[in-house]
Length: 110
Image (cartoon, rainbow, N blue to C red):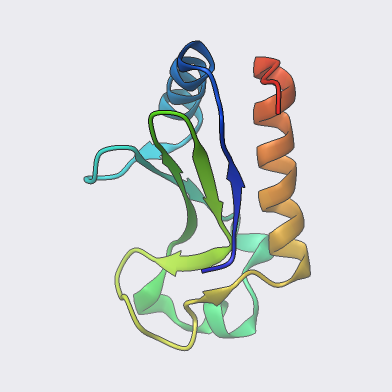
């Protein structure tokens, strides 16, 4: 899995990250998983054409001393489809910008 891993995060910073994601993302049914919607203008041709697979998102997992940011663009409707794939350059920039804002806004030391 292609992802960014930030480890050795203090418990107080993990708490701040969880609070931030609770207000800036959607909490997934699995504990510690958050879904961040991918703006429609960033969907590629395949994703735009797959109406039954929309909307699309990427996931962040928060553990006891780490958080992981996936580069996989997922569908809320299907696990496997040609529209579920790794982020293209503009989607990856969105993911990296979201992550950078999270770190800067919360003053997380990495």
